[in-house]
Image (cartoon, rainbow, N blue to C red; front, side):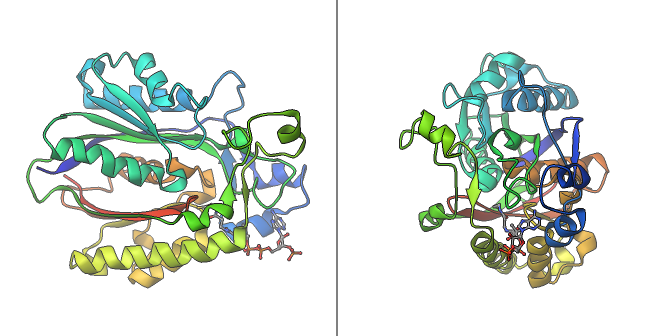
Length: 328
Ligand code: COA
């Protein structure tokens, strides 16, 4: 048995933070951000009372409504996030309570920007095993909560948002998730991280004073690895599934930098018109970028049954991977 996506939804906060807004608080320019990253604006969840669980709950509600199911039909909720409301309980448990998915178990998955692909493949295993019929997989982030808005190297890149999918048994063996290649290399952990707030550097006056509760990265280093791994993975997914560029309906890449997306498409020999891109509007929403792209393609009616999608990601860890699925 295969697992297929049977419903999608996204939720983006209304408030926009544009490059021009950032020009007012940082030594940066709209021109620099656009040409180096492809980003024009990003969304920010400004209400301090609301966190990642709010974004993910909205997504869960929309999926339940779209699919026309009752919340208690859901067997499992997985939330991929690196910005959970708190370290514990999991954000997935908060979503489970908010939508009253009373028969579901729930957990968070920490895979940074590859979190959604990790979670999608994990969720699919429960369908394939035949033990679960409905698995909700959501990627959601309030990246603004871990941004240092005095650090132009990082804060221009990220935004808030969430999206997700419902996984159910596919109609046949030829549809749904057909291949996955997921990888990790902890050697990359020193290039992209948040040191404070975990068991190594619990919150203290010192961690606050040293800005250790913010995301830090060596952008150039991460860029090089992202280009190599995303392109290599996409190429391998195509090769081992016998896919030519004409066979692919859409490449859905993680939205970290438009230049990384272009390099991946180029290696696959895919025209940019067949590449999902929304980095200009949302920036990098980490685990949410790929499901937001899928939800938008779905909303726009761009996924007829039988469409081949190749999803590829790269993120902190390092984590990366690719998934090949046929829309049903
Ligand atoms: N505005 C203006 N100048 C900026 C800037 C900003 N927002 N951010 C950095 N700069 C400056 C740097 O300070 C540097 O100046 P210097 O040469 O005087 O030191 C200069 O621009 C060039 O920096 P560089 O790092 O070479 O730029 P880049 O072309 O590599 O682009 C990133 C920087 C961060 C956009 C790019 O490396 C990137 O996208 N990396 C991957 C990030 C990523 O994907 N992270 C998430 C994991 S998936």
